[in-house]
Each structure stands twice: as structure tokens, then as C-alpha cells.
Image (cartoon, rainbow, N blue to C red; front, side, top):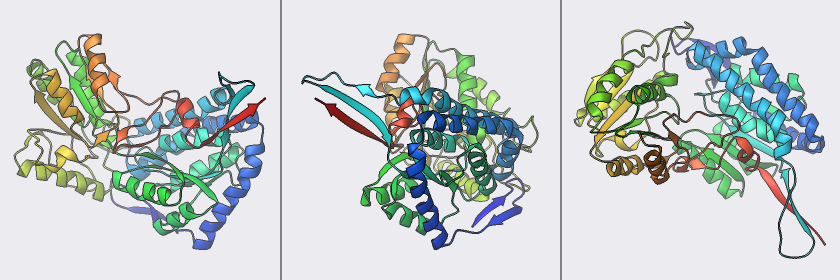
Length: 454
């Protein structure tokens, strides 16, 4: 059941029925049929529509932000910022995309001319999460609509009103004939859609377990897939680092969106040489991240998305504490309504604890003290995930050298990784397959067609 449930109170606001099997099949057939005409449009016309989707996001900022805050509990100021980020992605592809799709002439050894063209492949399915419900849709939708693919969008079950609002925006911008469709489908219907010969690819942003299911289905049916999965991102602080800058980055990187981000800085790894300077300041900064009403512009952390999400976070913390981890801040579920969980700081986490290996999707910072740079790198890489990371050091040369040793898809040097329309996004290991955004976002679901002329 797709439903809006206010995470500050648990109140069910609205419910929406799943599609019938016939309706799900019809949606896929319509997307496949729309592909024929959509891909035949001149690239400039598709670009204008994609850009208009971005413009309508900006125009409807308050409506979208309020829905986001209602459905998943994001503080209203952060919701507004996400609307702007999503708009910038559509605008980027609307403005820069056509040039990125220009034919590439190859330098070949033989006679004649060889050209690679970037062409669409057909109808795609996007399976999207609730934590950044506009931004993550934009990452998938903008490049693929521009390219000429058509979209079925299965959003998280707790974001139904927002997903319908995005569908309305796409329609109002000119993608109104099946090029983009929101689908309230079940897990069983997703399997059928992926198995259908009418579907050409699937993109998932979600958990590692969901990635295994969707990736397995895609593989069984020989469909291209992009998987953006979990992360346990390390933030490394080395001697000579700008400590005030590192403190702010560590707190913001961990507690923004109540820690519900795959690229949140979940492990802070600190050289023992700067520990005494860093750790007290970090605790003080973390203590300023109070929870509150997400509709209040002054609130820094709202509730988690659901009671179930809070339960998952609490179980990981309780397991670590029972096995010897030390709680420096937070660590207990507060009384009262809503799925709130406080900013929490732990140390002493060891490999026998679940928290050492598993991703924690909430406002819990795990801080480690290490004796050397080599120890910091080894600890950072001792994870099944490899999405983002950050290195703070006094020497740019040292920071770059450490960045080169990290087994991740993205590294920020003396800064956090922040998503931007023109920067590639993605990871390695269990953090996923493929890249999104920038020119790379145009290549994942594309036919790189070779044209050879004598």
C-alpha cells in the first residue's frame, strides 16, 4: 500500500491503491509505444522539455518542499534545497545535454571514417528511495528523457503524493503521452515488468539487499541495470588538518537529513595526533544538532522516515553498546510521538559488532582513533561498501596520496563530496554498479552505435 504517513506523529494522511496487473502492463505498453515518437523528436525539443521540468520544480518549490517534509520528515529548509538541486539537474541536461550527445569521430588505423553515436534504447524502469525523493529521481530521469528513453517511475511507498506531483510536472512540461509515468506497483509486478521484452533497463537507488534482488532479476532477463546502493563512508582526519573545518564537515556530513544518506560520513577516522583537538569540538558540534518539528525553519534534524527505520538504527546501536562500545552522546529513543532519534556519537566499535560492517541509516557517528595514516587507510577500506569518502590533511600532496589508496567511487579532499549535475556519482564494491550525472549519466542506458564509412 502506498500511503502518506506523517513521521512526526504516525498519522496516516492519505492512501493510494496499487495498480492492477492489467494497469501495470498497460503502463509499460504505453511507455514502449511513447518511445517511438519521443526518441524521434529533435534533440533540441527534448532538451527544452527537460529544461522546463527543472523550471517547474523551481516554480513549485514550496508545494514540493512541503510534501517532502510531510512524507519523509526532512526539515523544510533542507527540502527546499533539494528541490533546487533537482531543478539544477534537469536544467543542466536541458542546456548542456545536446552537446554531450554529439557524435564522436574515432581516430582509426584503417581507411574511412568511424563514428560513435549515443542513442536511446527504449523504456526504462526506475525504482527510487524516499531519502532524497526529488534529487534521486532527477539523477535518473533527466539524462534518460533527454537521450530519448521513456520512464516508468516506481517511487518509495511512503512518497506517493510527491511522486504524483513529479508526474504532473513532467506532463505540464510536455512529457504527457507516456514518456514519463508514475506507477504504484507491487514487488511482484516489478518482477513482471523487468522480465518483459518491452523493458530495456532498470535503475535502482536503494539498499544492498534491494540491489541484489533487482540486479539478479536484471541479469536473469539480460537487462542493463544501474545500482546505487548503500555506503559506509569514511572521513579521515590527519595531522595538519584544519580542525574547525573538519569538525563542521564531520557533523554536517553525518547529521544532515538525520543521517539518512548513502554518502553520509558514517565513520570518522582520526589520527591520534589530532584526537584531543578534534574530538571535544566534534562532540560540542554534534550536540547542536537537535531534533524538532521539520516544518520549523530553525530545525536541523527532523524525525527518521518511519518507526521501522528508527528501530533498525536503535538495534545497531544497542548491539554495539552491549558488546562494549561507548556512547558519548545520544543513543536512546526519546519519549513522545514520532520517529525521532537523537544525534548520537559512539567510539570503541569493533569488528564483532554489527555496526562495524553494516550501514546505519540514521544520525549515529562512529569515531575511531588510529595511530598512523596507514592504519586510517586500512580501516577505511575494511568495509563491504565503497561509495564516497573525505580526507582532511594539512598537505595537499598527502591528502591526494591517501585519496588514491581509498577503495571508493568518490573522494573529497579537504571538503565533503556534494552532488552536482556535472559530476559523476557512484561507487564500487557493494555500493553499486554504474554512474549517474554528468556525461556519464547519458552513457548508462545508451546504445553506443558504431557507424563505419568507407
